[in-house]
Length: 343
Image (cartoon, rainbow, N blue to C red):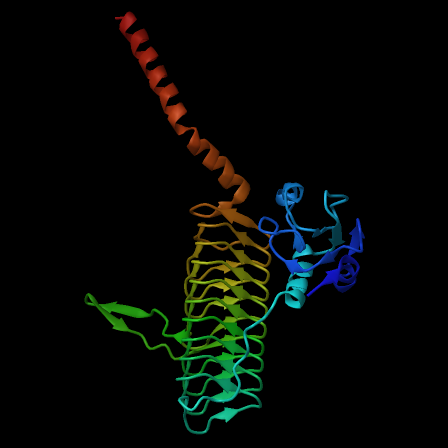
């Protein structure tokens, strides 16, 4: 789809620096772009790429005053570019419609308008699914669960019994919602299973990646609040509460009964022990191991996780240990020489 820069700027509420009459016919990343493409750069670390890209025009932040190519300055280049992708990039994927004859639907199931089910979906008794929700191939929904409006449940997702999923939730393939929490009591060396009879509640506008596991609560609920985004391969244990608009990155794990505040970021491969809290707006760096509660607005890293500024100083000291060892060893040798000379 062809668009002039003037049209693009109007659509993304941007300001043009350069020739507004240039026509763009495609859209691509800044490294891969070719002549005729529209691209973007949002992070100042990559501003130098503007000097080398073959794109015809670039969406940037308002911090950029000029560039070798025409630019459109915006408040949020990533969001502006995403909008243009949806308008310009071809979308050949069609959404499923209707209920496939191989779908198995139990008794007393309530289906809203325009619910779609692909082959081999299984819906147990007393389930409610609201308007315009799509269940892709092989999805399982357990007894008494509820799924809201405009949800997309991708192939082979398992939603166990008594789970509540609210509106506009996206769940990617292979994820399990409502599996039993890991609860055992050891009696005379034997691990006795503790029943997990609670539920999971996923609020509005949550997106859950592929192969995520969110365990049901022991008694009450595991709760993922609205707007939170969860990457692939994340484990969330029983009775965890995750606050609004938080980000949990791939391979992170949260142990049972921990409370995560709103707008929290857990970076990749971070781990959080149970029965603690992480305050609003906190950031846990990649591979950090959180062993105690973290206050609001804190940034922590390392293991055990500590204030990031302190963790960097400790790491710098650790890097200097080989030199420090050599110095101590040399001092010991000098000390031995002094002792020997006095005998």
